[in-house]
Length: 98
Image 1: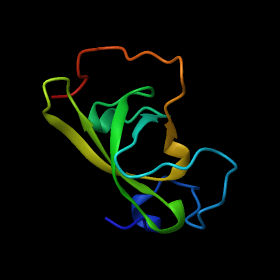
Image 2 (image 1 turned 120 degrees about the horizontal axis):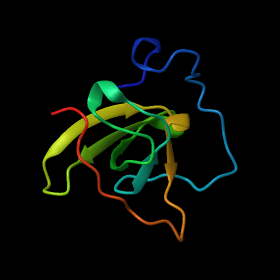
Image 3 (image 1 turned 90 degrees about the horizontal axis):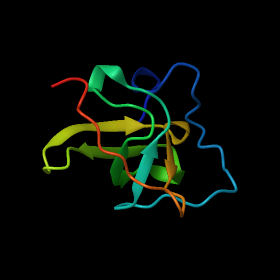
Image 4 (image 1 turned 60 degrees about the horizontal axis):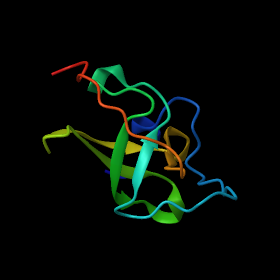
């Protein structure tokens, strides 16, 4: 899904503002930066980028349970995910919504 005004968070820009941060690429694991209770996801959950939209304007990110079941595939804008940093550790929790 291509990011549009309808499927981005309110107030987010589609301009693809450039940040002097690590570039996120397809197949990278990323960290969700905000809760998304409608999908059972919490800030800090780990997803895998399956598609990078033009000029890093957004990402398709797949979130899976530890057993491999897909929980959600979401179109997210750059402020909703961040790269994994060295020294971080994963944490298991029960899925909020099934």
